[in-house]
Length: 287
Image (cartoon, rainbow, N blue to C red):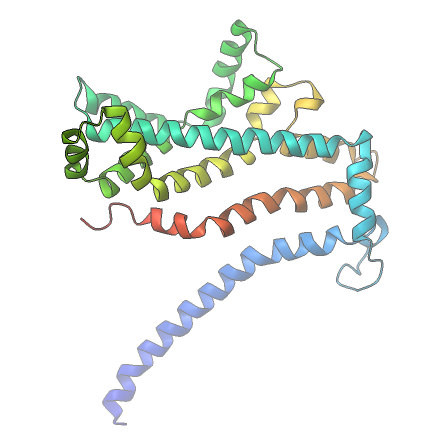
């Protein structure tokens, strides 16, 4: 190898080393909190506050799990079911609504369409916490405060999902296919349900995952809307237990175990649906 080739390879190796170092730091930054959560969930209260968190002694994973579902009369199980209901059902219905709206913005012409879509884009930039108080006032006037619907209805409408729905419709549903369906006698609803919606499958899954994550991690809206503990989602319930742990330390192990279990549905959803999700992210990339 000549001196010139060696000089050319040196920046490449340096650049590759830098990239690998950045990737390694990113992986450690992501995995270390998860590793700590797994280890801490398997320790009793004394080991949790000691310096032997990494040791194989004081292993009490099963006991912490039993204590979690026995604490306060089994409230955690009810909170978990509430979160599944809010998140899975809400994300499913919300994804269908968002994709349908995005499809309408893409395929139909109507008055002030682009201006209305501009309002949708503007709504994307509004933080959800800003909307909590107006939503509470509306729910109060409708008599829905401290009910299931006070948390469920607002999560069905997601401006970012509508934006993604339009992008997916542009990338997945050719106008020629819809024209062919109409020429075969299909109505607009039939063409959407039987033709377009099947093509929008990857995009629908992608919107579903985004909304599932947002609803599952939703904290401020339930805190504003709900006072009945039986309606709490996992996030709000664990927050309440964590606040109680300052005076009752026995809550600390169950809060950590509950946090570990609260992560599992999102991990499973991304693993099981990653094939559709990765395909949905490329929508509109190639024309």
